[in-house]
Length: 387
Image (tube, rainbow, N blue to C red; front, side, top):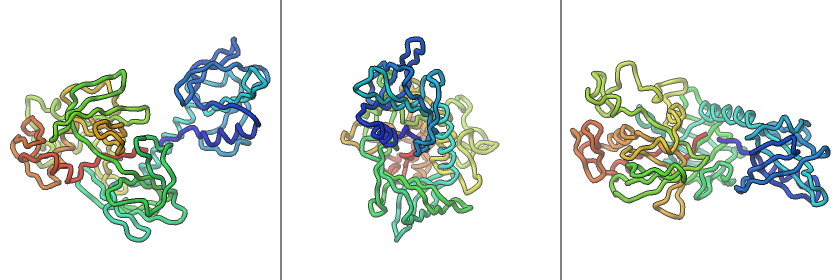
């Protein structure tokens, strides 16, 4: 999961300094000659702060909770993009203390944490609860598998907050609050086959998956307008800085004019020669990669990279407005994923027929007039949580 700058730790540090005002944010500019730093706070405002010879500037490693481990640095050691806690007192025109977490250190810690969630974790939809065990349905390119997550009294359990895609907003929870149909991501001691985890950490939530065709893109606002497959309803999906946007290989463009290769086409009974396409992954240590692991290997994109006519799948929290989605994960060029989910739901290749929610395009179309109801019922679950 993404490591956030710990406001609770910083507020504790501020309290230790007595009567203070504190700002948590990101360094936007540094002006040593003017003895000034500019901070963009987490609330969105950007303000200049004066420093002087008495200002204490310290660096603390990401994840460290002991403030005694903070070390003194110079203001010239602070970089744009670093996360900071700025503490001021009413009797001083200059800030009293700047506590810094380096952006590069945070990025390294986040990458290490992401890799650990992938290596020691599983992700899926809850299908059964029994005692201290939760059974998950996981989807991979080879089909569905089940994994067992075992909880104990030391397992940290958190639930995503409604209308938020930030892990930092997740709330402490209990095992009895995990329900059938919830998405769960767990990590801990993982079995050799990858199908059992004795969990040290669990995060879960109630998410929804929507599939649609892009009709408009607004890069300035981070919004993409979709026509939902099946219902044709208009959906507006908004990306935040915490959203994950990925793209599958564009198979339609890859095989344009020549049809599928001899080795097979998605939904046509086989993979192209040489195995799965780049980013799709194959069987590796601990079993075949699940959907969350495959998404990690796919190239990242931005909202501006999306084009009208593309098919996308979006996961989001179940918020208060049904036709407005806050993107957790968006997957572009998703025709193959939709086709596979439809076939796993019981459809058969249908020679390019279209049902109520079918996709156009011959071999890339939905099987046998299969509508979105059947597809979604078959479990097209894009992970709502990414490490």
